[in-house]
Amino acid sequence: MTAYKFLRSGAVGPFSGFRWPRPRGSAAGPWVEAVGAPVRCRRGVHACHVDHLPWWLADELWELELAGEVVAYPHKLAAPRGRLVRRIDGWTTAARREYVHACAWRSRDRAVEAADAAAAERLAGCATLEALEEAARELAGTVPQGRIALTMAADGAQAAIAELPAMGAYVAARAARHAGGEAAMDAERRWQAAWLVQRLGLSAG
View (tube, helix red, strand yellow):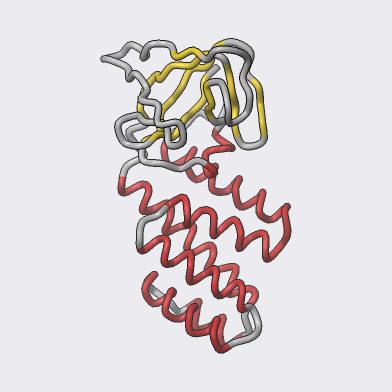
């Protein structure tokens, strides 16, 4: 089964610290095997369907092959065996920047919907993330209507300026949840996943 996995630089597991054996040339990397049946977050080779990717952003994105019985959990997959097939070269510094910037402006849009007319006009007129963060922070401290959404817009802008895609995506998802509940947050995560699929040319199957 084809899946995906985010790793730290050098193909290192973000939580396990495991250094994955990488492919050489056109051949997939060696198989990595777990001892025993998969247990979420404890045992097994963990990976992602494309819909899960926004939860696990890291430095490198790899296409992974899973083997054995694949167990589906909320936001992740697990299997007894897996191997790296290829690195997704499109997940570059520039792509990460585009992604977190897009998330920041979506958080801004939530604040525009929640704020009063004057605050919404000011936010809508922000042309840079720096201007957005400054305006949203100021308005969050002075305008009662939409204060939480304004704070989230400022946090999203801050994450984008610092180029922290995982944080920016999280803020955008929480802003959606604040605006429309769990269904809105799920829709926001689907939008984030679709952005990655389209931008990086991933297989959504």
